[in-house]
Image 1 (spheres, rainbow, N blue to C red):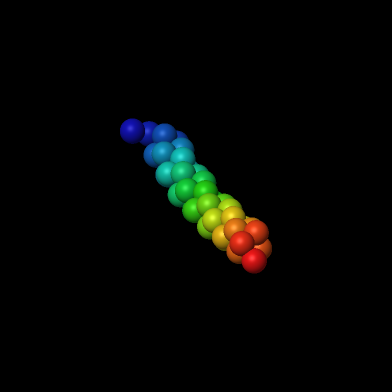
Image 2 (image 1 turned 60 degrees about the vertical axis):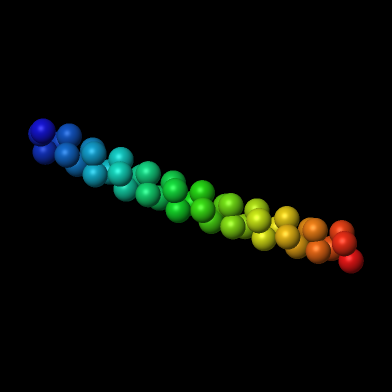
Length: 43
């Protein structure tokens, strides 16, 4: 494997980690919003 290919592989892995952490944050925010909405509707 060339050095450039290795760097691209590392960058791609870093990008995947960033995307996954963003997805987790978005899911947490959505879950929190739905929970608050359900709380408001049942009140």
